[in-house]
Image 1 (cartoon, rainbow, N blue to C red):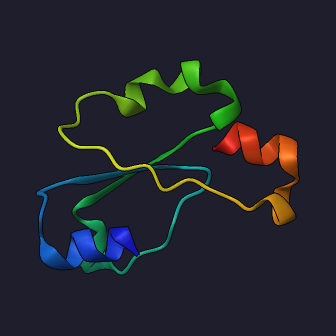
Image 2: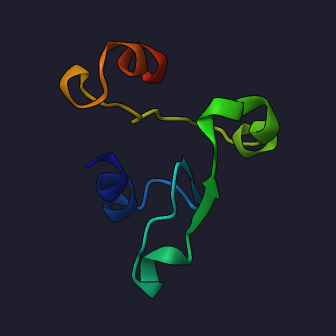
Image 3: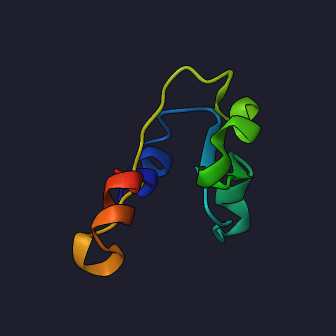
Length: 76
């Protein structure tokens, strides 16, 4: 998992996660992680969550079988 590698390698002083829901971390990890819960159907409302970062990774995804063609295309 990308997040695990980033945190284990200590590559960044601060990591911001923008996701559909909050994740749970132990206290040691959570001190360097900021979480932004975002409704991806209303991205314009969350523009500030995507600003002020030097590096970005996108790990959103689903499968056609799980979500159906229409949702798969929208997420992708």
